[in-house]
Image (tube, rainbow, N blue to C red; front, top):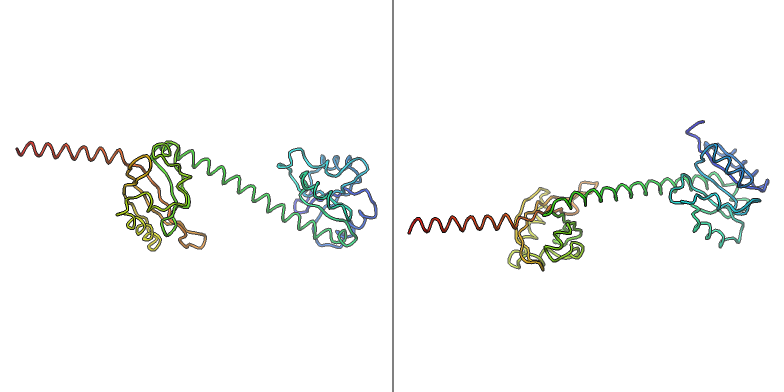
Length: 280
């Protein structure tokens, strides 16, 4: 079988209609392998022999309804199914779409004569839908992996800032949510100015804007004040670029260094006491 040809299955019991469809493809340059069947049984036999790229079926057939060809799990259908209805059967068309049909066609002589173009349009939309589903699935899997990695890092989070320091996205861990007394999702839309001491707020925003303007990474350390108390964050700020290379946001890879900071302060205090005692 020529893999470059498009396999189209037509299920139509009215001979005059199937003849019009056949003639329309004969006068078209569209590379197709066209199979005409007259009822559900013949259609099922044809599908079992060779899976089509597209099925166009009349709604009313001698042995049932065209919608019966729609797989039970319509989300995993390997090909689109379009239902043909007579003029005035718009309600039937809507029901067919709800049942899982990809599209519907209201029959007329002009429409049947234009079937190659209609099929091409359906296949283009179907391919776009399939690609979109694949990308969506990959994004969900990627996000799940990202959350899995992030959740294994107890003291880490990722935040996205706009130029004014507004957090447009934030991913943290349940442990950090509990520790900070603030869920990551509730921080989205808030400004960094709201979680740092007022006297340092503009400095934090200036650092974000510097990454926007210079396009270079920056490592900063600062204290935040949240419902759970005061914590020290070490944040690596990096520019986020779009497909054109323009900086559209700043990503902050956050690491909670509160314990390290406290340990350093205790050590400094001990050194100070030791020094005072030695000098006394």
